[in-house]
Amino acid sequence: MSQASQDLIVHQSAPLNAEPPLDRLRASFVTPIERFYIRSHGSIPRLDFDQHHLKVNGLVGRPLELSMRELQERFPRKTVMATLQCAGNRRSELNEVRPVTGTKWEPGAIGNAEWAGAALADVLGYAGVQQADAGKLHVAFDSVDEIENERDRFSYGASIPLVKALQGEVLLAYEMNASPLTPEHGFPLRVIVPGYIGARSVKWLAGIRVQDEPSSNYFQQKDYKLFPSDMNQENVDWEAGMMLYDIPVNAVICEPGEGVELPAGPVIVRGYAIAGGRSIARVEISADQGQNWARAAFEHPRGEPWTWTLWESRLDLPPGEHELTVRAWDRAAQTQPEEAEHIWNFKGFMNNAWHQVHFRTR
Image 1 (cartoon, helix red, strand yellow):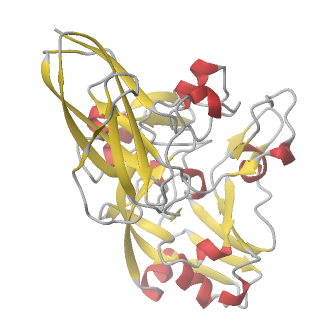
Image 2 (spheres, helix red, strand yellow):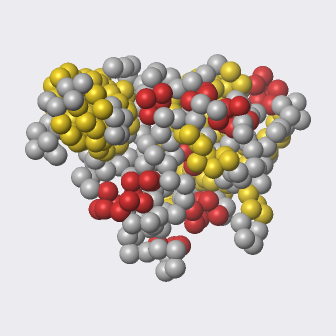
Image 3 (cartoon, rainbow, N blue to C red):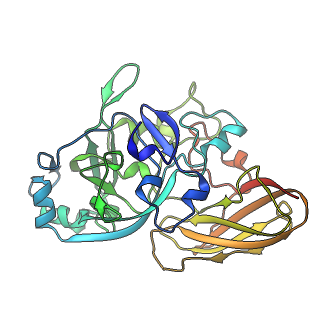
């Protein structure tokens, strides 16, 4: 098991998929590397910084091949605070409605970090990509990991629209929380696409291609898609799925934990909320199954456009069994669906239903 996974709940060791316990996740606004969730689809490459190169080609004016040193020295270093969230975060709750495929993530497949690297827009500009092309092209990313299924061996790939790639927040990152990336998090180079699902922030990046359609990679064309609720593995129409990009508004209770027992009286409730590139406007807690709601206070009103919001509320609870529910609104007045069954899909993606915990006070 990797060193980075020892503070995490490991769902799989090969490929390595792990998330932190919610109380540890919620302990700080910036998630320490050792508590940051790990999402892998195949091998974790062990790459040499001095030997690694990035190729940029496709519909560009000037194809590039850059060493890591050239990437660091030729382009200004930029930092972005951004939260990454797996599209399968909270998949376990959808699995309780009806079985779904994939790792049964709890709500800990999320983390907030300060990323540093070269702005993707700067690299694309150096390659001769024009802003006028932004509305019709895509930027595809290729990894060097190795993924196996029953019939094939291939590497991970994904793409984002060029209009997003040219925004200044998208990075070719080589640092995480002021340290070099660890192998589990993409050393020596990864993409960071703030506001998008984590699947678009490709790790172990080796290739960038500007093209007139989304990536043809399996993970873009089939895996990370949202399918209608009447489809499953047997009757799926791959063309019917929506490619996933933006993170929807979501809120989770991290403390108290599911099934704990606490003294009656004042109970502190803590959690996180996220809305992609939109800020959180309001978080509310209910102790009576949604009949009445109390507003939570924000702990970190930092104004960061790409980060989660940590919130806290204090409730006075009598002895007995309790069910707490949380919901959030973003600045566009979008909120969360009430029931997970209303957004069930066989891949278990994008669960942003009201989150609940059950516990007892004595």
